[in-house]
Length: 331
Image (cartoon, rainbow, N blue to C red; front, top):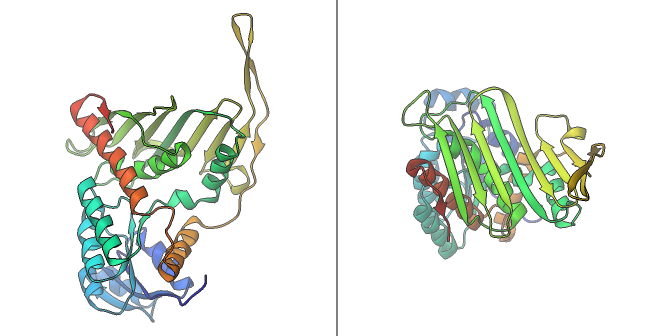
């Protein structure tokens, strides 16, 4: 990365925030961190002795010792913390989702633009070497015309009370689908199942329809017997699978299956799976490096505020479809 490394503060030192601490410390950028829980802060202080510690993200923002912050706190706090940081003149990297309201996200984008600050969203899989390999297969025409995409993000655990499975898991899949199609869906249909808490959906199935004829669905759940993080992309020439539960050499597989016709009968021609080579890089490290580069140079990240707003619009439409029990159209 060219230019001086900006001092960064991390707000939220929980399950995922600890990964940010590790990466920004390794990159020589970690200047401070905060968490709402004092015991969490004290427990990590010895691991990062050169970083100032705060109980409460607002105190870190107001300290004046950082140029940028990473917000890895609960989703319901993202909007308020991002606004406070931007108003303080800081660059901001917010874990997904950017916030829980489209209008608020647009307001944060406008504030970042007025202040000339980077506002980046943590759509991690856009930086995953396996997804980037999948996107190259689409962009270079190896798969032909896109026809159908489905994505599963299923596991047992990480049960939330603040947001449902749609808002907790699906941002990753929606961001990848929008990146592959290059557009917003025209219509969504979604359903949800409430089993542990009548107010929080534990499983949701969202179906997206695009004006190009592409269809996609996203199935997410934290009540599943095993981990299944898989995306399948079906094209007119070939199909590809990104399975994040498999070892590196097998994460992306290309299938050059074909379907022809014998008079009026379809004939399937099966092909062996071809492993697709991908780089051995940690997606979060790449994402953190991207944020530092954007802060230093003023460049825009792939997952900028506009990209975050597009994902929010789809999430919001899916949530409204679940509540209404009917399809929701997007402009």
